[in-house]
Image (cartoon, rainbow, N blue to C red; front, top):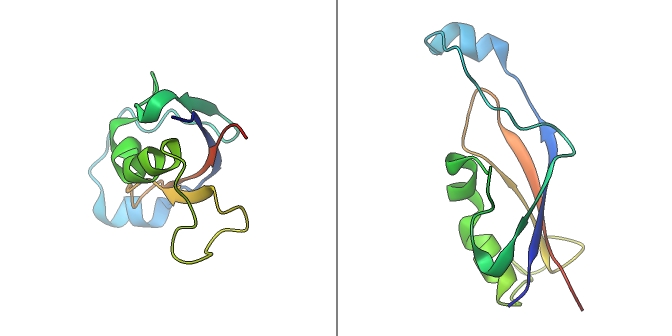
Length: 101
């Protein structure tokens, strides 16, 4: 099994959509651009948002098994993936990278 490094690359904030469709909420996403986590043996890292994890879990599990080349060459590094969380108001893009070898 391989570890998988997860890096928050970009965080968007669609205030126009929030004003149109979202009820006001006090606490939103705490993720910061550049923040990293390490998924050991395909497991969710401590502190990782549950919703973000569900968006990336299958890719992390596959990378931890040494699999890659998703969608026939989608990524320059075949042992990586760029996955976004499913928050349509403030999505975060995460780079997943297999560690080792």
